[in-house]
Image (cartoon, rainbow, N blue to C red; front, side, top):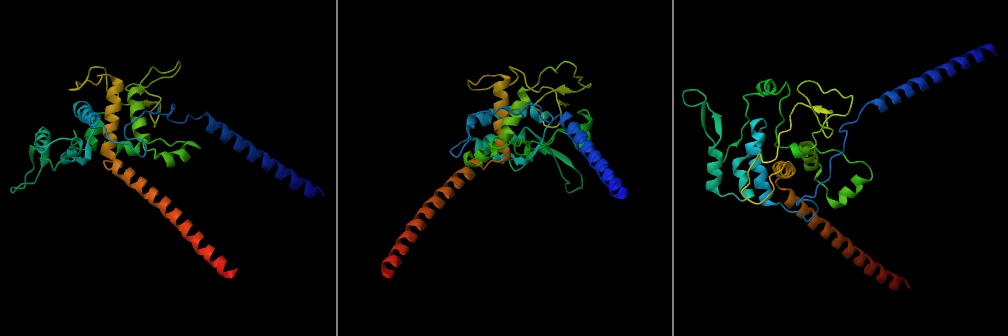
Length: 287
């Protein structure tokens, strides 16, 4: 009897210890911040939805912003200059655009590396010789490549939003995040200490502080059309351009998906009518 009470006391103490540990772990997890601190703002994009389309003028403005501002730090090594034909540029314009870049090529017949003007078949080069050089020039954090950024930076949407995303073909998580990040720099809350070289941005997915300073300011890039030359417009244009760079066949994929869904619905209706007719005949024969 005493042994049973002793074992019961040990078991009770163990349960209390587990409960205390679990409670402490839950409290510690609740105390940890979840990034991003602010969910990305939803923007109305021309390419959204099953019937979306690219806004070519916006993509051209986004390309200019990337070239004038972003290309100083960020590469785009999966996008070739000849791909810009999809943005409405002619072959001569693409050749002239590519020639503005210097490509480190080689070796030549003598075994030496050399520099040459870019060609349409080349891809957007990196502004740095290697990752180490990029990190050294940016406070130890190499800037990410922009080729697939709009796909890689999509923030997960919770229940039940992601259920509706299946039907609306939501694919704008990356552009929403990029836009929110570029326009989301603000003063830190009271008591929050920003380390030296850091910049507070509650929309950043990795932390509340990032090394990149605000890259955009009003009037920074001049447009040839009547689009506003504001941070808000710049952020929308470059986010749309990066979405195109990440998935240039997005519109074609959505159109194909819509046709497939329409075919499946029609096929299901035909199969139902066929089944109904066949079974109706069998019922008449059995009667």
